[in-house]
Each structure stands twice: as C-alpha cells, then as structure tokens.
Image (tube, rainbow, N blue to C red; front, side):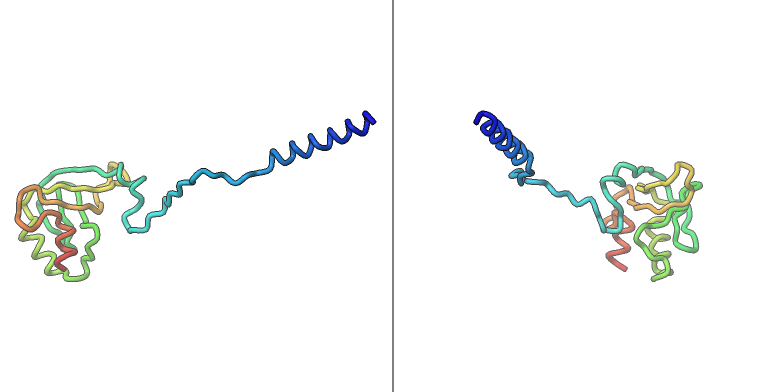
Length: 139
C-alpha cells in the first residue's frame, strides 16, 4: 500500500513538474520596431551620426553642374544633372557661385575629394535656403 502510494505520488509530482515547465503565453506587450527604412536616404540609426558639416565658398560650377569648393567636387544629392542641365547651370552660376555655403555630406573616407552633399546658402537669399530642395521643388 505504501509502495502504491509512493508510485502515485511520484507520478503526480512528475506531471506537476512537466506542466509547470510548459510555455505559457506572455501577457506582456511586445514592442515591435521596424528597423527597415526605405526612404532612399539610408537608416537614420546608422547614417545620422556620420554626416559632417563644412563651410566654404563655391569657386566654380563644372560642366556637369558639380560645385567646386577648393579641392573638393560636390554633387548635389537628389538632383539629376541630365534633366534641365542648362537651367540648373544658370541657376547655380547666378545663385551659388562665389557664395558661402554649408555642406552636409556623408564621406566614406576622410580622403574623399568627390562626394554627394546637401548644400545650404549661408547668407539670407530670400526664398533660397537649401539648394537641393529648391531645385527639386522648382524643377
């Protein structure tokens, strides 16, 4: 009788241990974060801390509408130089050439001499602040 009781007790304890370890659904709210960003500019979690800021004077506009600042050649990000090429060059010659600008760029290496950037006029030129944005909005 004691042996039967012991075996029954052992079986019950084993079952209790098995069910206690069974996964239960959590009542906690899980926060889901989507780390995929598809806006064409890259993930701000990675990119935003790597941009550099420089100020300088644009000394030349190249034939392919790139800005020359000292030894650096700057391509305007988001601007397709093949579309309205002459109008863009006229605009850059009139509004950017020989003016002080802020350059915001993400250089791959410190030795990069050619790179894409967002360019902002440093002075107050009325309607024009960011060159890239102005060209995009006004064609």
